[in-house]
Image (cartoon, rainbow, N blue to C red):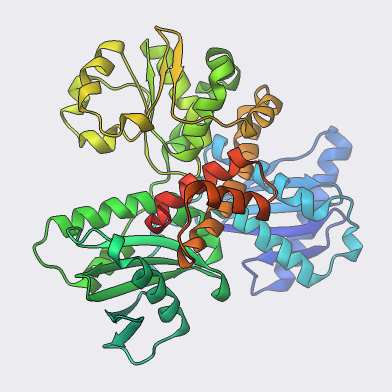
Length: 465
């Protein structure tokens, strides 16, 4: 995140830490002291908190939390936030700060601790779709190695380093090689490898005897982004390899490095056009079915009038901040003639009853689709979950900006658990119910929450299926 500078200052004006650090400490200390004085002046004279200062070609924003002030400054004059993005950013900082600074004395915060607090806040705001690492894989260096599958284990060829990472990744592939579709030219999976405390994005192609493997080590600040864009990268791989009779493996990895992240649809929706209360009223007792689908990344079709369908689709997108897939408020049969049918309908889309009836015979995996039929006042879906219902009731009347950030925090828990589940690909395969039982013993979540995390993990590590 090269565009933002974040500083933590005591309310008295003492600079505790900045990220990125400033070469001229004296200038930074003077600036933070001056800003603190201005904030105090605004509070005492005008009896209200100062939220921002504009000067030259940039704006500095402030988040006051008890005895502390966070100063947020954009470093690139061409990089600006919309009003909605600024609100989300500042709301996220407040939420991140609460668990770290609640009832803390600013005099007792060490420089090292202050830096860790900023690291934590940076990680949280970096995950928001309003702040994108434009090319997430661009600066990550891929590693490549080749393995030969033997009766017992694997043999490394064309690479003498044989790093510990290589052996762990090779073990996963070798154990599952028989389940790989040999007709597909390249496969990928995302997995946490606990013994290395790292997450790996792995791409490989195989003929069943020899396998070429490439991987990227995903840094912590990109783990949420990588989770979200995985399905998009999978499509890129399919498109790239499908259009070429032969391809160089390194060229495929370079193509992945060039992938540009555009965020998800929620990051582009006007929060004034969503209504959690309306979603609750219109789905009533079946909200658990609808939320399970949205959170798990399963398709949802909203069938009915255009204005209401679009409202529900946009509102449901708030629960897809951890995903990158299609969200379309309204589609027609003409739209479907211009795009990839299966990709376009793999998301949350609104449509008329006639459009739905015409495409229904063409849809694959109908059992995975959740349908909100507004005309028939009926909701059908494959799964339901009560975990988010109580949580939903607490936020449905909140300001949309605050609600979106609170939901984002819950989604991060879901993503974290899904990452942990991806590591099970290294272990012996289990049936679904046994795996659920084991996970419910290990983690303090209800089965319904674990089911959603497992569904997301299986989409990113096919070896879990």
